Image (cartoon, rainbow, N blue to C red; front, side, top):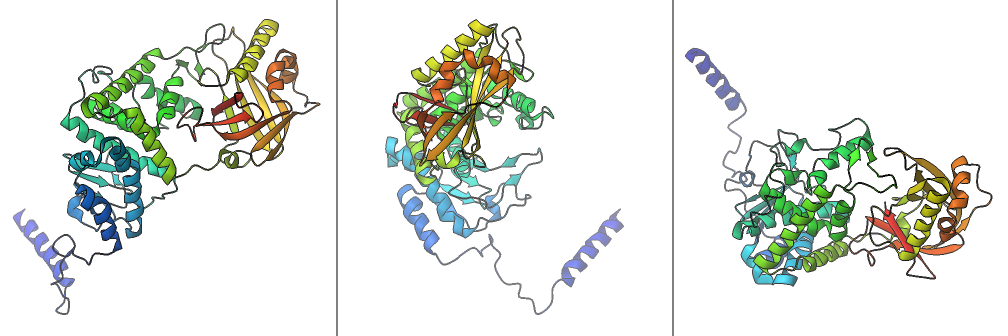
Length: 478
């Protein structure tokens, strides 16, 4: 055994020696071992002005393997031209909102004192990737930055989510959240949270989505990672409220129902069975986060949330909804389901509910939801999805009604197409739903976001507001 080991060492030494020659200069310093000095340039000056001087924060972007905890992993440096755009957005969407509500001294005191930026993610053996780490509240490592695009709002939100998550840990380490938080979902924390991902539940995409969401939202958690432990659960809820905004959280709550396979359970009148347990757990967690931020730090979470969302929108503006809606565009369908939405106008709901009552009284059926489908440049389909109340679980039926459209600078004019194409379901229910059909007929709507109606809802809800009556509108999920 000793002889074999000796031979291996000799062979290895021979390989190393063969790679060197008398002409090679072996005196150069290695990066991270004395060779990491450089003349400061515009990037360094910008960092000094925006981070180091005002907040005593060091931002390292030159390659230094020692800054990465797991040195055996392959991680590449960040592209230098991305350093300022990334750190500028972090400052404007994380630091500046906190400064606005709490002051610069607060951030100077509690922020991490060092950032290290890396270009690629850190891949883990369990199949997950690490996008950010924090060390004892003093240092944060941000990874996977080389694909960053400031105009890409999901990418901006991903980084911001990491920042709020890690800063939440610092706040919680200084003043711990009440133990009541961890008592809300004590038995559902799991070390194998990473097994919660799309594709893990069913080969049927629709069913897989339902089961996936039920494995965290349906248990009272805002993200799969929040199921990992009580501390990450708390900071994930905080960061989701700030990065995602009010409408995002409310939309999660409003879509928590009890499923049987692909279908929401309903009573004999078509009313959905709510997942009241999950709704209660998430709302209790939100309430504790709000109280914690106010009582422990004197921060109004709603104010910080509003400022954070405004900063995100300012740095990565959302395109006008009209430019995104239509055939071949980002959004082709608006789905309106009053059981999943709050804030629809009374005038639209009157038309919808009157039609629903007409179907129930005249045909023994009920409307489940409607979709506005923009199929061509001059055509919209009003799709009425209706159900038989005696069938608790069913895909239901579809009736399509055509409207001719003209769109001039976001003003959409709808005209009921007559005659309609032959469609047995449409013909069968047409006489029962006149109020719904006429709500759209010969009407003009402004195609727009409805964030003035449902704050912070851009990219979640898109709507139509009657040009002649701003109190008459509808909106739906995209």
